[in-house]
Image (cartoon, protein in one colour):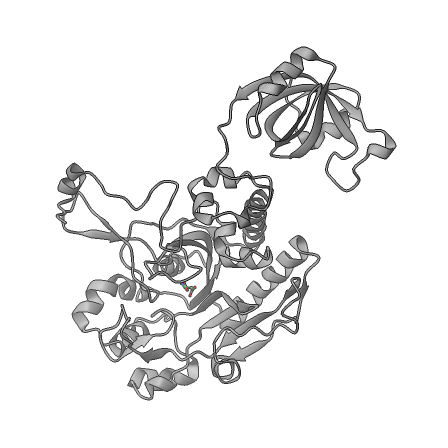
Length: 466
Ligand code: ASP
């Protein structure tokens, strides 16, 4: 018999159907056995009664084994209806059970809130954790939001372009992961900290409007809720000013909340704005939590932070500059018009304000971007202020400067920390709850056991000695 999805059973009252899925819950009561079955579409209750040969099979099953169930969809009597739960008004009278696969004893219960379970066990058996109702919801909502954004931007003439993972370093103020090249021994690719250079080069390439759900890799020290790889909604637009990028993104966020979280309230629309200076002065940080009620789980306080200094003095952990100054966000942000003269004269460097805008939500930075240096002279100046000599500028960024000289349009963009946004919208305590296969805070994949040693043979091929 053809498979019926559990969510569709209601349309088959009185008929015999076949479902396939997992045993979610099993209650053995001697002459009867009760089950909850689960498939991707939901859950339904089933009962074996008065069928000794079926009961015998039922008794051999265990929760989480995979079964094909044949049964009659019975309407429940009025007083047995479980109002408010899926399929609460029907029950399967089981006429046949076929075990499609057994399940070993679970390392942890998955039909309750798994957030109370030791996370290292959850991560090791992530595929089981993913069967949990909350995790299923998180990953499915994440997908729906991605689809919504894709459709929204596509409607607005954006093109989704995949940019390379094996590449040269793109600085975002972090360390890059490197990948040794076998074919060119002694050389390395860098994994992107963001698609920043590629997206700007797509603007030079005439696309005008680009987006991508981009994986970014940053080799940072263990810092709380960070993942070495994470997802950005990355976009770039030509012929725009700060205002254009900000208003487009604001509109998407408002629509998205309306569509997926009608129970939530955005504290202030249009989103309020604050300068970096004001945020530091009033709140002591550049992503202030401006919620009127911090205990309201349905309150969303978006805030734009602008007018960041373009440069800061290099600190000990600086990985990009060699001189006295380094960029605050990335080196591609252009200074504000009123600061261009000082910038080009390398005067009053601490006073140069960048076009950078960050979007924050409830005290978290959920995105940031800027208008870029679309003239090579400006881009070169940033590197000079950072103390790069001509040779280093040429070898690291010569390709960008060359490209800018071939009629690069004025352009700018933004990237959202997509994991963090979904985390906040779902009221989850950390981003691992909305990432299907997350790593630990130390960057380990406990399920795949990565990072790991490679064979002596592979090391030799790569020309690497430890
Ligand atoms: N590439 C930047 C980042 O990853 C975002 C942007 O400026 O568009 O922070």
